[in-house]
Image 1 (cartoon, rainbow, N blue to C red):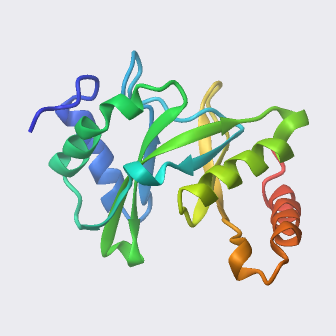
Image 2 (spheres, rainbow, N blue to C red):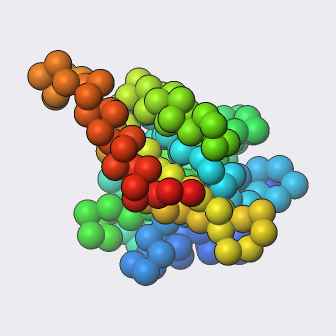
Length: 176
């Protein structure tokens, strides 16, 4: 396996271990650049880029799974707003890896940014959008939860109403 030029074997192994740990369940990191283990920006919505995703992977995940996936997608990861992610599914029986785009917002454009992230996730066939808020350490971020993607074809013409309801629920659940 050719290792991704910016993540070393120990770091790749640590990422796989985060997916395998039921108390952690996954990771999101830059993957390349001067700080490849940096997380996404606080105040961001993460929408997976479906063409780069791989799911239904055997568990436990290992260093080769993460390294080979990232190495094949290093061009996509080189974009400044793209991140490498991995998580467990099906109660930890399967794993998934992807490249996600960070949609970063400030207080005054949160709703518009959410709509943009939602449209991106909808276009790429994603089931949910991840949200990251401020972490405990200055300049860090923390995963705060997922928001389901509303598919208009499943809403009997009520897609926009459901999108607005999702945003209202999101604001209550994740006020920061």
